[in-house]
Image 1: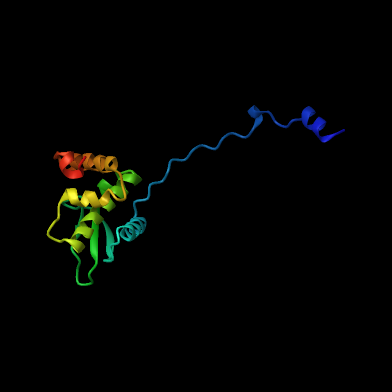
Image 2: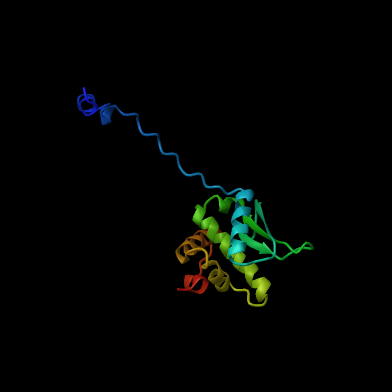
Length: 155
């Protein structure tokens, strides 16, 4: 008997008899300092920031996310409040990092021009305006304030 005849007579299990599809597992969003440091280092390279930036996830930060000027070793510290970090998607985490690195870029190039808009202009080289908008909405909810998105992220 030829192979095609065998396949025709015995085609194999029917689709209903196939193994069940594995359950989809939700994507794990990493927010630990090691992963954040990898994001920071990658974005530093893309933005051509030579100065070191270390990450610290902290229980409280008055600004929720901020960058401290370099200490004696010349390294900036990017501080992220842990409970705020937990509310963000991966894209939003990346947008926060890009924004804070925007401040580092400004500080290392034009230290007297610090503005939120300029930090976001730098960040928008890496992340989208829409993601920055989502971050500001969450940030303002946490802080109990509101601002003009056009002033912060432009058009």
